[in-house]
Image (tube, rainbow, N blue to C red; front, side, top):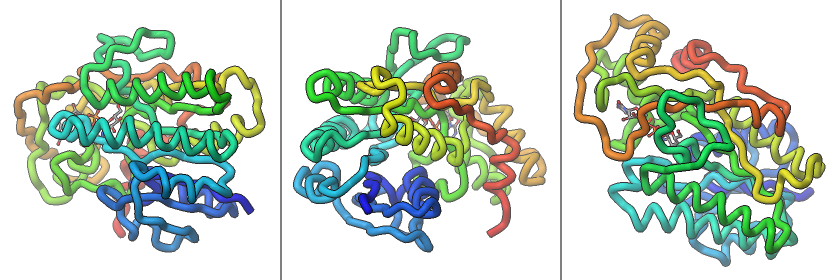
Length: 313
Ligand code: UD1
């Protein structure tokens, strides 16, 4: 049976995807350099883990040889990390992605579903981001993610490579780690609430994010791959892309209150710190194109997703 290759499959999103694919009876091969991912994330999931980098075309060539398709999630995921480590971020997020696209072509035009980002939009003002908008990334991370979308489009035209870029908004869920300077805001706030620590808020806390549960992200990826394989609406898949979002903005102040409420903690004080450079103020996506393309809309509400994350054990 042909396997699915997941780059970054030992990471937060990748390991959830591996679990679902394995549960569906698929063979899963994970390529991960274990810089951010952890082998333990894959405990209990039938899989083959290859420790290596998307910077290494030889490893990619070997792993795509009998693959049915590629889920490309390996990336440097933090906006701030990519500001602090510009060239390393560019190498991981752009050069690494080019290696993946090239390997997909060489293996016979394998379909590729890859993680793009809401960060491609930049600051849209208080408007939902739609795919018809002119993208204006305001960080190197967003610029690199947009560059990959443009490359995927060019690969479609030149090589006929089917690709789908999913513009993930802010993904959260169980297994997301709080213990790094670059960790996402939800695991940070959950950790604060559990420890009875104030929530650090960068900026005025009025900035919003469209929080999408990882289970919905996994459904979007698998549905996208299935549709691409079935070649429904083929023209959409040569450099295709769409948001994966709920359409609901939540401010950081609302988020802190929701985390405290769901965990049953007394509201923690907010420790306001200067806004971070490259930080988008308003972010919420328009889910219409995703619904048209994938026939799917995220269904996990924020309170529900937080409650699941906060379950003991
Ligand atoms: C996140 C993802 C990125 C994804 C993008 C899509 C992470 C680490 N980054 O970026 O991969 O492409 O969404 O929209 O998951 N903040 C605080 N206090 C904290 C931590 C963060 O106030 O302790 C603030 C940040 O300044 C920012 C907001 O919370 O305004 C969200 O930050 P973060 O979770 O790091 O995500 P994004 O930068 O939106």
